[in-house]
Image (cartoon, rainbow, N blue to C red; front, top):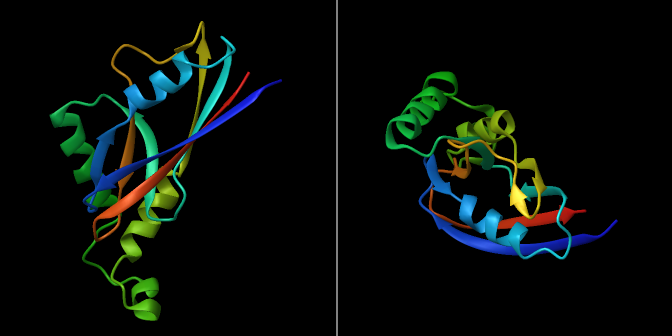
Length: 138
């Protein structure tokens, strides 16, 4: 078994800022020295997430609205009371969304569906430089 790891950085705005990272992952997989395996996409930290979605403006707004309905920003969080940084909602959203995703690849191509893109969602309450770690096993 072989392992290849690469890191990337993306500037984000916070507050459910959604970035399509599919092409980054696809380019990483295309250049691998082995044709089959799995790629893990990981965002270090506890206020962002990685998932798949159809990267289309209506669905993106629906996703943002769903997070706001499920985990509202404007309620009291114990984290905010303890640390005073106002981003308790972003930690809970990240825990629900998760900070990693694993996708298989075959013939150096992601095994994703036609309308399935890989996205980074920054839930924090400020802009950030987000680090992404891609690790392929094959």
